[in-house]
Length: 415
Image (cartoon, rainbow, N blue to C red; front, side, top):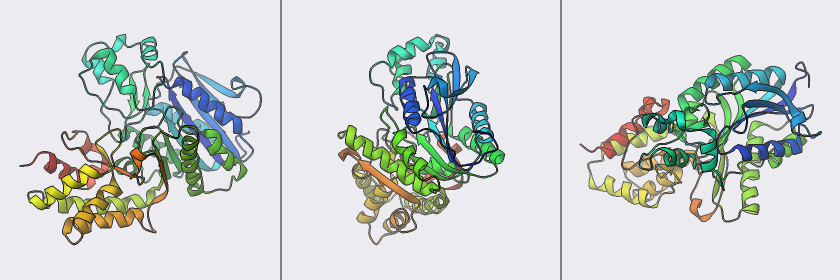
């Protein structure tokens, strides 16, 4: 495809595979290749893998081999470096211009949490000893997308707790945190002259109010999972085939396609595996954030009362949580608060959140889940720890502007 030819969609995937997900990256590239690009849909990917020191850019087609689809080779790339992602986005949009752009960030994910998992190695003075071979060896077997934390902990010390962000690069001992992600998207949007039509997280635990608030003005629609994702991630053939068939589809339609394809693939191939996926219109995130702010104000103002504490603990005991127990389903939690206090201040404030998320004007364009372990997932999570409040939470835009973090501080550290 010539740079002067504008497609209907350019679907770009940034595969940060310099870690224990490398084999899954190759599978996903072949799924993309099974559908391939057309004159109206460009399917483009960048893959940094662990097995060699080359990063490859692909324009995926149905012709010949995967190697034949490689259109550029770069030296070793630190996929956790914001500049590397900006460079890929800029190159893709210049080389394969389109009316609409979709960007998928593919790797481990951790929701909003930005604690540096590589700090574990540095803190114990062994960062230079964490080699590709060691990580690859520890990752053998059947790794899942949220389990990378344990590979470093096994290398360094089992007792140290460390959390995760997104786009982890083992060779460079680096990752892209949520603040950097916002800066990257800001710069990319400036360069391509309009927000992304769709931002996908083929990664774990990313469909959170805090994450979406960070990027609310950078893209129209965000698609991701509240729960961890199995290693197979998105079924790219099932995602791309409808887009190629109907390249005029909107971002909302494509978001629904992704949600359906993802959940259907696991219901069919892994029926016992709990999975979640949802698409969120980010234009509606501000209204939800304001409603949560009002709820936080009421909760914080009445925390000293036995009634409010009782409501909180009853709701927390029953509310839908995920593999990271600090992440709770926002709609289900608020529904339980409203149910327990139907006429009180807490219940009424909580019901307003439920109405926004579940009503006709909900920012949730599509939501599906499968498995009894996620039966009460509704598409959007929020951070609600009960023991330790991360000091990094206050750095998020959501926490800076609204009072949920103040409520958490008062709840966890009662005066």
